[in-house]
Structure formats: structure tokens, C-alpha cells
Length: 622
Image 1 (cartoon, helix red, strand yellow):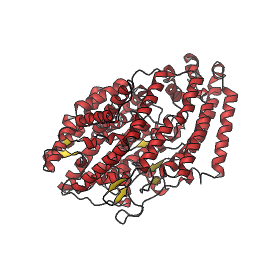
Image 2: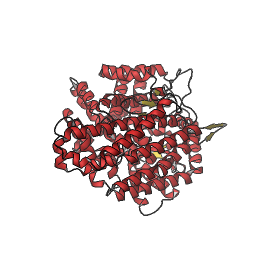
Image 3: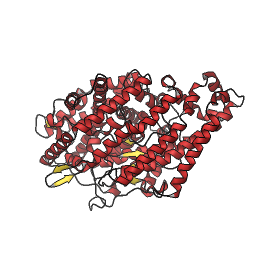
Image 4: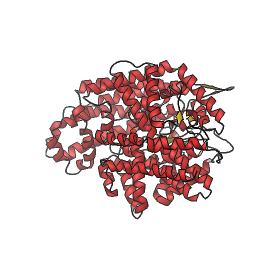
């Protein structure tokens, strides 16, 4: 069952897909300029403030009142001649609670992401999770009872206003109906989550944040050491890769235990909720059919030789070798400009690209810079990578980055701003219907990247710069499509084998090397030191099977861009309307105005063909 408000985690954020390519920064590097930090006072002034305490007490009171007024009564209300108005009032009260709780848990979660090694932040986050879980447990009955109302009664009531406003949400939650259990069992699952999955998620986060990697005389956290995989010096890349492997191996037992425990926890939940396939619960929450995902995965896997194998063989030739070592996979091309891109230049580049497409999109994105909704510098204990968190519709989203000034960092900023713009545009739907399924949510972020890339490419006149930019974009697309489907394949094998018993660290390493070898091809040389790199990927821990959403979004954006380039007139208006829809429409509905259908196998081939054409262009530039 989906909860009124999940505890803050990767699951209710929107992550950058470039986990291995994230990079850090200092607050005031002379090359990139001063970097912004976020202002969380738009949520609450402090964790001790009276406003927060008042909201917690208000949420508790509203939960008790909802129980008093509606538990055991919703079916009777649905039979009333004024059912549309009465049920709408009930849902409005439920939605108000969702908004308050969303604000509370978002504040605690963002403080935790700011520094998960700070014991004060950790305690506040844990205590807030406990309070939120207690409140959501109390009102868990509401969605369960709505789903027990006779379909005909509810459908009739939802045909007229005011209940008609909530028809998309009612339709959405009724998808859960076949997997719904008795109220007490659902309550037990929810209450136990803080001492099971949520606790293991938190252990992972705090372990990753506390890891240190020895690089020469330096002891680095995960962000700085990952950044060295993009250094122009191959020896630095090799040393960084070995430092990563060494520390991962020293901690492999705990990562193996976390992985096994969470896989088992998911198997128990799936079994009780009558999900057949290990990814069915993810498909349900994404509102995408399993056969659509299977068709996409099949299309991408069959394209490995035409995409990743072909590109990395090309890159190996550029480096004058038969095969690249795995630490050279994201290495910058020889003889290319590797200057640091100042923060203000990155901002202006993205806003300009957004503005050429839609002035409204640029206006919304500009607010993130002007109103301190972005946290960009690296700090000890800060969450790695990047994400956009929507908080709740009465507030606004926040973006976390680790900005170093590389071109990939600019793309990551464009990616997360795409999420942010989407979240702002969808907020008018309210807390229950603003959230977008991950498959469509990743469309806005990848589209933002593509707008930025196209704008930069159009300005590039130097052949070497154009080659570097094309190669960088192809690598990002391979990370977004091929690599994420390989991640999905890894997860499927792990979760299927976990049903038969625990997996050893060695077995997890074997699976990892197998799927990576298949996806990357013979031009990437893997060895035993790479076998533990599965251990730090946060998606596996926080949100099983999330990763295919990136490939879905990338292929979708490639198809959308083809429509845009062929018929730009009126496209921006239709695109912005798609973002405004939030979670009120199925992917088939939002794609119909563009003449696209994800159920058509040709749809995926169309998206993948764009990557092939870019690789062909690179081959011609050799």
C-alpha cells in the first residue's frame, strides 16, 4: 500500500542518474565562484521552533478527528444522496493532513541530507520519522475504506463536482485494491517500517556518509574520490578506482547484510500483498504496465552492441588502446578543454536554454537561484550525488547538488531543475495529485538536460569542442539508458536469488560483473577490484527497481525531441500542459497529444536511434 506520506528517502526524491559521475565542490572555489546553500526556513526556522511544534500537534489533532468522524463510516457516506459533497469534504481533510505531514518530514529529511553524520540531525530525523509513522498509521484506514466502497457507488459519486476533482486520485488508489490487506495487517507493516526498511536505509546512508577513501596523503569522502574518476590524469583515475574498491571491500559485509535484509523485507511485503513479479509493486506505483517495461528492457538490451559496445570501442581507439580500464569509462577525451565552469555561467546557460524553449520555464527555474532553493557545495556528511525534493505543494521544492564545475555538473543542474520546474507546475493539483509517477517524472529532468545540451551544441564552432560535447552527451545517455537497465537486470537477479536464500558478497560481485560486462561490452576491461562497486548505489537500497525510470524518461525525451524538431509550433504549450498534469493522467494520456505511444515497440527503437545517430556522427569525426 502507498502511504499518505512516505518517510523521507530516495523514494520520494528525484535523483540524478549519474551516481558514479557526481562531483564535489568547495563553497568558494576561485574558479567556480561562491556556491549557494539552501534556506530551509521556508519550511521551519529551526528544529526547536514553535511553528514546527504547532504543526506536529495540529497534525496529531487532525488525525484523531479524522478517525473520530470517518472510521467505519465511508461506505455509508457513499450511499448518501449527497455522497459527492460529503466524500469530497472528507478527502479535503485527509489532504490537509498530508500537506502538514509532508512539510514536517521534508524538513527533517533535508536537514538529514545536509549532514547525516551530525548526531543531532540524525536523532531529529529518526524522532520525526517515528512521529510521522504514528500519525499515518492512525489514519491508514482512510484509503483502505475508500477502496472497499462499491465500485458503482464511488464511480457515480465521482462523476459530479466536487468529488469529480479527486477522480484521478481515486482511480489511482483503486489500483492498489487487489493488493490491499486487512487494516490491522497494513497498520503493522507501516509501524514496523521504522524498525525495518527505514532503519536499514538510514544505516546505509550514514555508512556511506562516514566512509573515507585513502588517496595519497588525503583521506577523502565519497564525493571527492568519485570526482577523481573524471581527472585528465589516468594515474589519478586508477588510484581513485583502487581507493574506492579498497574501502568498499573493507565494508562489504555491512553492505551485503543491508542488501540481503532489504531484499528479504521486500519479498515478505510482496508476498503478503500478492504481487507476482518482483518488480510489480514498482510498476504499480509508476502506473506503468509490466509488459511496457519488459518491451523497453528488451529493446535496450538488444541494442547494447549498437550503443555502448560500439561507443566504448570508439573511445578506446581515441585513447589508442584495445580496451579501456573501467576507471577510464568516464574519462575526459584527450586534448579537450577541461576548464571549470563557474556557477554563474552554469546558471545563465541553463536559464537561457530554458527561456528559448519557454519563458515560463525559465522564470520558474530562476526562482531556485534567486530564493535559495539550491544547495550546491560539498560538505562533510552531506548526501552524495544530486536530487530534487518536492516537499509539499504548500511550500516549494529544494535541490541538492555537489557542484565542481565540470560540464557533467552543468547537465546535472539542468536535470534537477527540470524536476523542480515540473514539481512547481504540478503543485496546483494539491498534495494528493501533484506527485508524478517516476517514469514521467524523469521526462522533465531529461528534457531539461536535452534543452541545455542542444543550446550549447548549437553554439559550438570548434570541431574538437563539438566532438567533446557529443561524446559527453552520448556517455550521459548511456549512463541514463544502458547503465540503468543493467542496474535493473542486476536487481532482478539479486531479488530472485534472494528468494532461495542469502547471497554472499562474492555472489553479488559475480552478478555485478556479469551484467556490467554484458552492458559495457569488450572494450571496457573489468577486474576483481570492480566487483564490489554495486555496494554504494543508493537506488538499490532506497527504491528497488527505480532505475528503469531513467531509461523510460530518456527514450521518451528522445522521441519528444523528434516531434519538437519536426513540428515546433505549439509544442511548448503542450509540453507545459503535460507537466501541469502532475499525477492526474496515465502515460498514455499525456503522450497522446504528441502522437506517441509507449506501448508500441517502435517507440523504444525511435528513442534509441537518436543515440545511434550521435555515435555515427562521432565516428565521422575520427
